Amino acid sequence: MYYFDNASTTKVLKQAADASLKCMIETYGNPSSLHKMGVEAEDILNSSRKLIANVFNCKYEEIIFTSCATESTNIAILGAAYSKKRTGNRIITTTIEHAATAQCINHLENNGFEIIRIHPTNGKYYAKDIIDAIDDKTILISVMHVNNENGLILPIEEIAKEAKRKNSNILIHVDAVQSFCKIPINTNKIPIDLASISGHKINAPKGIGALYMRKGTKIQRHSFGGPQENNLRPGTEALPSIAAFGIATKINFENMNESIEHYKILKNHLLERIENNPEILLNSSDNCVPYIINISIKGIRSEIMLHFLEEKGFCVSSGSACSKSKKSGVLQSVGYSKQREDCAIRISFSRENTINQIDLLLDAIEAGQKSLIKAY
Image (cartoon, rainbow, N blue to C red; front, side):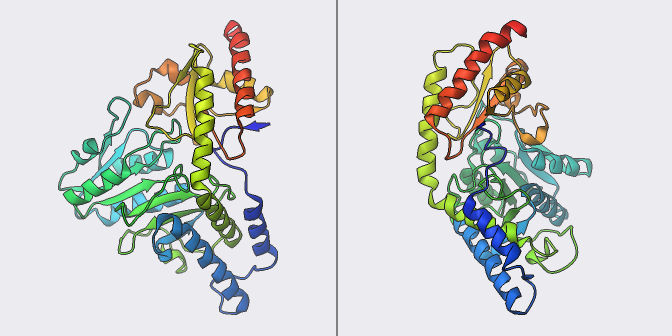
């Protein structure tokens, strides 16, 4: 199989798997225990926390481990909204958010919060459109850094800086799942308060995530138990997964610039190949990351092409893995037709993908065009 669905999940690095296994069979103490094995476990916990904090250029105490980015997002959005409810009820977000954010926002709307959903302008997001929506009752802005379906980059630095200038009490949450270890996020320069990240997007196991929470940020807790993770995520930490997350973060961060150059080469080659095929439409603009590419193949629904490619040995997706093949509306939101969205597939790279693999993938797509359009 040739795997081009890395925006959905990634293969666990051997070094990360080894770190996880060591915690399972050697350093298996509880990080909260006071004996030697507990202290050794706590050292691994804090070491992993520091490796992740290094990416954000923040204090290691500002990293809170969770089970996934969805949990991080729930803690951040619901906690921020309910902690600020006495001062206002307006929340600003976008129309292209991941379900983790969108469903939290919908829940808050059903419970009396005023939700402002900003649409893109000509397929792009401008900080001004979000800043203009701020009023004296605005308590939270929640936006993604990179869209998971088409790779669109949102101007989080400008949004955060301008929002804080207009109202310093607004909390700013960023879904950084698709940008973590791929695009620099320096919290000394970008005044965000909360950010959600996921392990399995960067070669760590599934079931581990983290929340960046700036020191001094106050949010309401919704889980109760022990004092772990700043009292926000009680329960014994999943140390094997956390150790793997730390190692995967370290390796990805150290190789970030090299990886981006590799992705650019792959993307440029793919674009050159489809340039002369008028039946393949590009849904990822110049303002998109090089490791997520969305295309539509005229006349062939996504699911049909997906199954054809799978039979040929290729894994791609039709959009967000969380949508279970249901269309999210992201492409329509940025200006494309429903028909174009119905025919869209997402190709997302890892460091292991090669130009030869892209040629094989596009050969398979072209073979699908010849056989499927007749049948469809």
